[in-house]
Image (cartoon, rainbow, N blue to C red):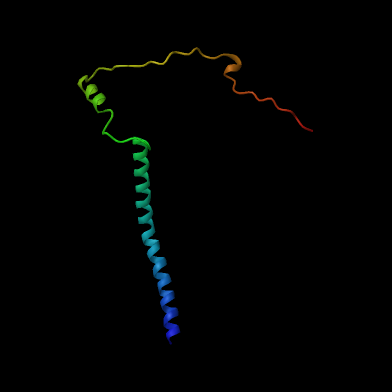
Amino acid sequence: MTFIYFLISIILFYYLFKFGMRLLMPFFMRKLTERLMNKQQQYANEGPFQQSYGDPFREYNQRETRHDGKVKVEFTPPKQSPKKGTATAGEFIDFEEVK
């Protein structure tokens, strides 16, 4: 009789555990991914060996807000002449046909 109760309790525990994991695992996985994404974002913003001292662009953003409506271009890349002939065709690779 005790053996039957033992088997029923094991089977009941198995199905309750399975049902509980089906309900709780998405929640835990969502929290885990949010935590990992926050750590990655913090790592991307600060770097592995840097300390955070606030917003590094605070002074720049404050300067730019004073000049509403004006556009200031600080850097323009040098113009390159368009390539002609084989320079635009791509990379050529020599090969040997084997028979």
